[in-house]
Amino acid sequence: MKFIKITSKGEIDERAFSLLGASSKREDDTKIGMFGSGLKYSLAFLLRNNIPFRVFSGYKEIKFTTIDEDFREKTFKRISVNGKETSLTTDMGMDWKSWFVIREIFSNALDESEGSIDILEVNNIESLNPVEDYTTFYIQVNNEFQKIINEWDLYFSENRKDLLYHDDKFNQIYGGGESLIVYRKGIRCHFAEKTKSLFNYDLSWVNINESRVISNDWDFKYNLVGFLRKISDKGIIHRILYNINDNWENDLTWSHCSHIPFSDDWQKEIGDKHLIPYENAGFWDEEIKYLKSKHIVLPNNLIQALKIQFGDKIKVIGDDAAMDGKGDKKIINELSKREQRLLDESVKFLTDAGYEIKYPIKVCKFVSNVTLGQAQDETILLSDKVFTMGKREIINTIIEESQHLKTGFRDETRAMQTDLINLTISFMEEKLGRYL
Image (cartoon, rainbow, N blue to C red):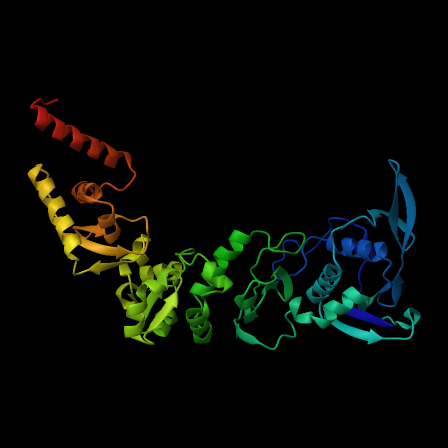
């Protein structure tokens, strides 16, 4: 027979199994356990599933039995501890799984001194022995518990051999893989199967709920960004810069925690390489060929955050896009004969109509298919796409972007709408010779 043995220094009070809501660790951030209910749920799980187990407090064994009790035409099994009836039943924690039991008992053991876990093989359950001055749990290994033993690193970080980083606050980073694992103080609190990640994380600051899982996913990601921004380990930074794409970390909002600066080692690791937005890297094929290996492809969100902090120390292809989020573009220096004719005719139409164009016009190829124009740096930018839509759309776009530059009003604002209406009325007044 095979048993999981979990021990910790000190003798457990039998009331820990019956006093619901009692926990001396809830306000202690140094502890792994928190709420006091997990041990009762573990007890209910073991009894409900008829899994043999024994518990010793020093030399004294704590005995657990159940008695049937009818309540509203249903029979429950009320739990007794050392012959004393409790208000607990074996129906507690009906959604619990085998690994929750090991997680709970081992977490409590680690909170005490000298917590340990072992696997024993004995001839029978009666041959299991107590340990003086220790609390000892013995749980018989079934198929589910054996699976946990076989895949120990999926649940606990203590034996992992792929440590990449650690700090003096007991935060650790391990190699990632095909699943994302987050531990809190050595105990798994988040598992996303088939979620490829750069790293697995063991973080002391993660907030968990009573089920010992991350209590708020958004809050966790926000704080993780701050943690990674300030990290100065060159190996971790290098792995992020050169491997982030197609991993879970690619979707983090790197502009979060802007009050926490990137360490200077981020800029040093980038060096003189150009950063290219991952979202439209194919748009820059020619530039990538020219740069050869002198570039790094990163999610635009990360490029934007780096650019905001390091400014001109960071070289970005499509620099303006990294700052305003409007999408990359390329200036077209030589127009086709057709494009040049359409542009000249459109400008002449506006001039003849009395509309003054005060700004130079440049034609661009935009990454975004819906962008027909932009007003930027005292210049009207027209998309090459607008030339496939006729002179009316070219004129429309020139007027809109020109008014943006003249007024400073932004797209889709009431002020911009009012300006365009007033412009139209002014043309009507001139045509009619009647002024409102």
